[in-house]
Length: 111
Image (tube, rainbow, N blue to C red; front, side, top):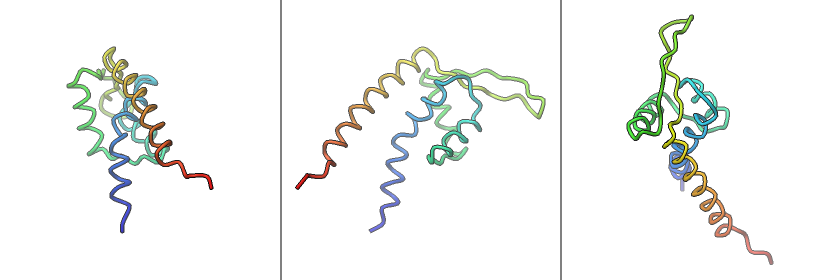
């Protein structure tokens, strides 16, 4: 039995939450989001991140601004909107409850 698919699905399930949490730390460029995710061992590629960012923007959770770059074209920096911060707070609460439920249900019995 191959567990890789299940692990990949678990990681996908927390992707939105983690991306929003990273953006909540302050204005950030997409490649820096990818770097932070990789540093946390949550691998994400541009083909996954950009559609996610677009969806979150369309939901009113993100905004962005263009910043000129001395090393090339302007860069798009993302920030959370007020609704984005509220949504992230709800995800944070839900994650805490889910994490606790998983701990309880997977706790090994003491013999």
